[in-house]
Length: 121
Image 1 (cartoon, rainbow, N blue to C red):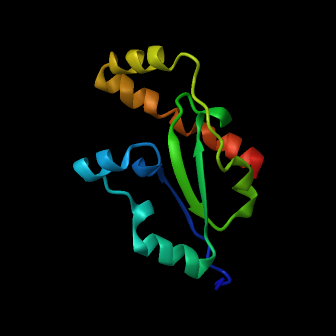
Image 2 (image 1 turned 90 degrees about the vertical axis):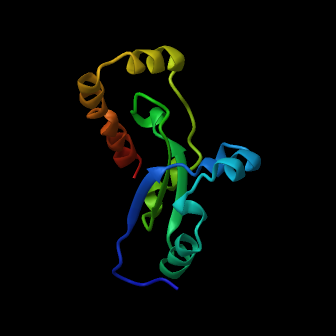
């Protein structure tokens, strides 16, 4: 049942159950809002759509696998979009070698993918 007027958007890391084995999820107790009944009820009640994607193909420096939940159907073309940098291991190693201050500064660029998502919408 769609409720007119409600605008909802949620962006968070992808559910680990989508890329880890069921045994790993069980043994380590990885939690995800994506697997809760509350999330399922909210999406059903307000006609909310899930988008699962990597942010790299639309501008992020890393793959940044994530989950979006919202009512905006304009983002559907990016559902299932996957991709990571060609030099991922080198980029990961470089990031890990940074000082905390450098990491904080670098993380300020991570929302650059939003412009790509906006262009798709």
